[in-house]
Amino acid sequence: MWMWTTPPLPSISAAMRRPTSPIWPTGATRSVHWLPMPDNRHEGHSEVSNMLRGYSKFLDVLEKVEKAILAVTVGIMVIIIAYQVIMRYIFAHANSWSEELARYLFIYDVMIGAAIAIRRNSHLQIDILINLMKPKVRTILTIIATLAGMVFMVFLLSYSITLVQTGARTMSAGLGIPMSIPYSCMPVGIVLMLLTSIEVLFKNISALRGAGKEAQV
Image (tube, rainbow, N blue to C red; front, side, top):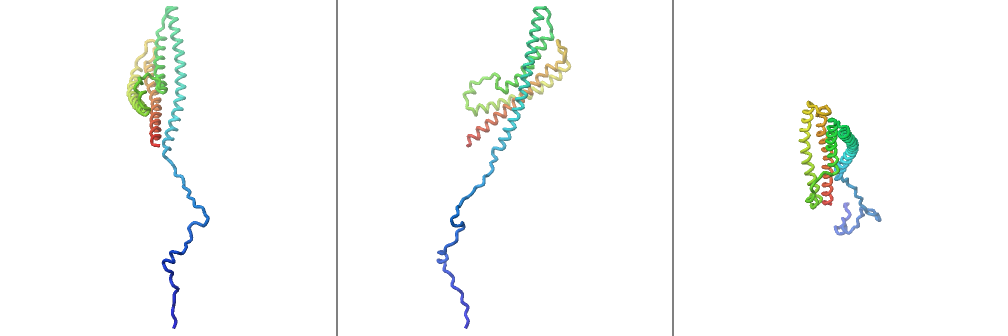
């Protein structure tokens, strides 16, 4: 009589005692390499900084042109005023055009110089209380003051353009030129002041953001 027999199954305890082959090879050093994750937190800030740096370079060139114009016009004013004094007190003959030209050049110099003063923070200001505040508070106040000044400049620019258009129909008494030429110093100076105010505004905003990030770190 034939009988089919099967080998006995190992017990559960024997199976649990059986050594298992390790996943890692014997003698191998286990090391985990972490892949660096890209940090995009400062990319936007760096792009703004690059744009601001390029804008500042543009204003550097513009400021050199403005200073050259100021140097030339101041020299012309000195010559004209000296000529006027000599003609009036030595030769007893005064020219109306010389005084008028010197006055118009002086007005142009004031408007151009105001733009440079904004960039250099050279305008007269009462800073007794401001100096007692923290740097962050001073920066915030500077941003608010710059924004308020820019809003005022925009309104003043619209009125100055109207003034130039009106002055085109009027002639000056001494030089005989349209009054739109001397009146044009207002829109020219306001545009220059707006350009420098934009730089001041974004520099203070960038400084405020940098201070906030340092506080978070």
